[in-house]
Length: 178
Ligand SMILES: CC(C)(COP(=O)(O)OP(=O)(O)OC[C@H]1O[C@@H](n2cnc3c(N)ncnc32)[C@H](O)[C@@H]1OP(=O)(O)O)[C@@H](O)C(=O)NCCC(=O)NCCS
Image (cartoon, rainbow, N blue to C red):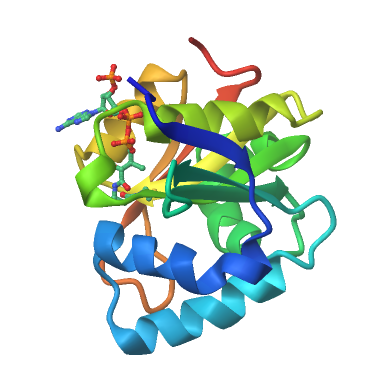
């Protein structure tokens, strides 16, 4: 399934433009959003424990990536989701959790197991006992993949400032279910 694709650690700051090209195609980002995301990714990668993995073709083309970091309650994402998790009695998930910040696979390379390989590879490096993430709150391939790996809904209809669509926050024990 993963024939001719290599999953390995990615120096994301050095490959941020290739990664954002993949994200733009996978997730639908315009040029203005890419410029904003670029600054955010570079800031995130300076946080303690932040790391990334990439999926690369034999020709050296990046076709997927994942990055994440140990959760820090002081980080913006955590402060936004905290009241929603608290309302559901799930705020303890914010401690001892590895956050998946982004996971994207080029549309031409989806459904070959690359996304699954990226997220299991990065979470296998985590020392935290669990993992959390947010995904658009709809029945998407992303949500299907996360459910199949053991992620459960911790909060639904979560609104991020400036994001038009509501998100679901999901959490799974580590290591992820195979
Ligand atoms: C989410 C994403 C990264 C998955 O990458 P991928 O390489 O296609 O995923 P995989 O091939 O490893 O796994 C696909 C899994 O998704 C699920 N899936 C696929 N299509 C699905 C669908 N239409 N509905 C529900 N689940 C689906 C299945 O669980 C499948 O698992 P399987 O291996 O048992 O068949 C990719 O679809 C993507 O980049 N999407 C757009 C960007 C995005 O939404 N990113 C996540 C932001 S939270």
